[in-house]
Image 1 (tube, one colour):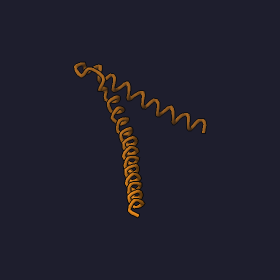
Image 2: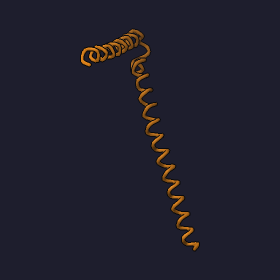
Image 3: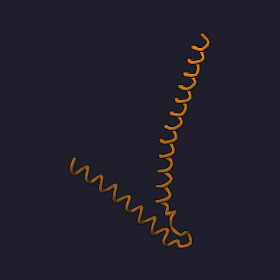
Image 4: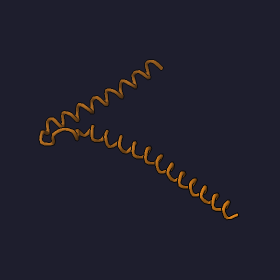
Length: 84
């Protein structure tokens, strides 16, 4: 009887560990991906990849990337209004 009880307890512990691992992995994948994408977009739009000593290049990059974003949003709106 105790052998059967030990087997069931071991199965229960394995199942709980598996559930904990799945929960942790799914949270890490979804959470870290979103955070990583947001940080990357923030760094891209703020021209973090440019030399901070050259302020004209930094501001020119920020303006250009901002204008590109506005253009892309405007293009999507135009296409949706025109073709849908």
